Amino acid sequence: MLKSHKKGKIALVALFIIAALILASATAMERTHLSSAESGLRDGLAPLKSGAMVVKDQFARIPQFFVGMDSLMAENQQLKIEVARLENEVSNLSEVNVENVELKQMLGMEQEVKNWGPVATTVIARSPDSWYSTITIKGGINKGFAVGMPVVATEGLVGRILSVTEHTAEVLLIVDKEGAVGAKMQLTGTPGVVEGTTSAGNILYMIHIPYEAQVENDQVVITSGLGSIFPAGLRIGYVTNVESYNGGLMLKATLTPFVDFERLENVFVLTKFSASASNSSTGVEAK
Image 1: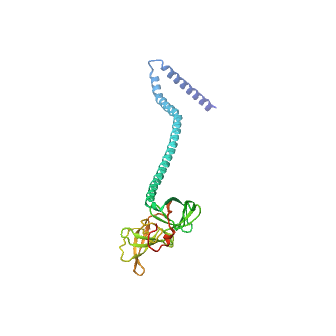
Image 2: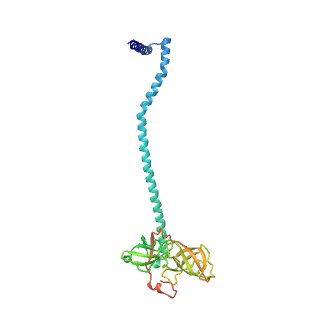
Image 3: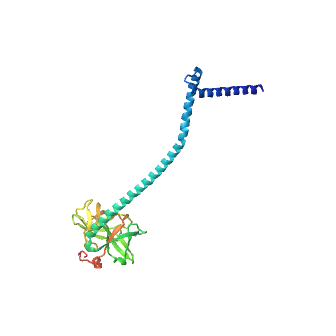
């Protein structure tokens, strides 16, 4: 009981002192001269008041901070949307540019083989059995396509039509074993036959080359137009290796084709093809 009574007295004295300090602080503003005790009290309370003001200001800024964060987040999201839009636009422009270049090349090819009635079309499927041996193109009987017609791309020779339906045509690629083509070296005119491989691949071989012929790597091979259904002068590929075969009596050159058959999309069908050309043994170019 005595301890509780003492605590009550101490609390009462403390309240009295606080009330006196507050009264002194309030009334001091109205006087020009302060007592030493009042001056000391004011100086002692100054840091506390300053700290309280700082805390008050920081709390006041909290709503502004969250408002600013919302604004930054909204701006960041908008920037992300804009970046995505610009990336998509750049991608579309790049694709359009590639298409424009390809179309210009196709127009150039059309001028080169204009006497063969080129008809532009697109690849719609590839053989499931051998990725490189055949492709299916859009257009068939409805476009005047027929078996045996040559097929070319802007880069060079593709192959010949193997079969047709009303709206599609199957093309045998020159990289197939059955897609042999009469050919020659572009610079020297050395003749030979270009054929594909039995297995899927992007490799060609030029065979029946005379042993004494000057054949070197990087030489360009083109169609000869002799005893063939293809017009002369179409690019086939370039030499990457030369070796002798048939007991050392002939040369065989390994070629890399100019056409990328895996990425082939647009082609021309040369519709002014004569069936007699493929059966001709006179060595005269088909017209």
